[in-house]
Amino acid sequence: MKIPYGLSNFKKVITEGFVYDVKYQADFDAIFSQLYIGQHPTATRSSYQVLFMEFSGIATDSAESVERSFTHKVDVALKSTLERYAYPAAAITSVDKSYSSYEKMEAFFSATRGQKIFLLIDEYDHFANSMLADDPKLFQSVMGKGGDREANYQVLDELITTGTTW
Image (cartoon, rainbow, N blue to C red; front, side, top):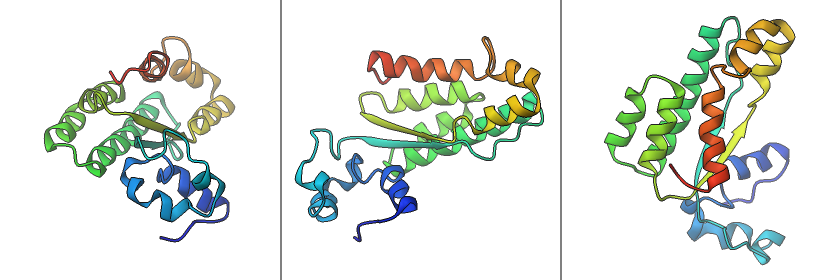
């Protein structure tokens, strides 16, 4: 495996989880042995399942379109992670059958209970900045206290602050 270089390849190293992903445990030394991180590895190297969520391209013309686009992005990220780590079909079906992004995250973290998850989020503020610039009322209804996104961030906040996996 070649060592990626350059900014876009650095992003690939992070988003594909080369450093932390348990799937690359056997390849860590071969990939990083000539680099500082390979010569000074952390205790957490290659010990996580990596969940990557990317939120660019979310439609922001209405609260409904934000919800639909956001839920779709969450759904794709969760199911692809479950598939990547060969979870049972029932886990993927549980995420698929859940209606809201909050319920999908609940199903995902229930299925991955006991696993260490490395969460990477990209472009989390892109759609919020777009709404703020174009329609402050829409921004407040979606992102403000009691808004649609608050429940999602509460799930993530609970996981991060308690160190639990749901």
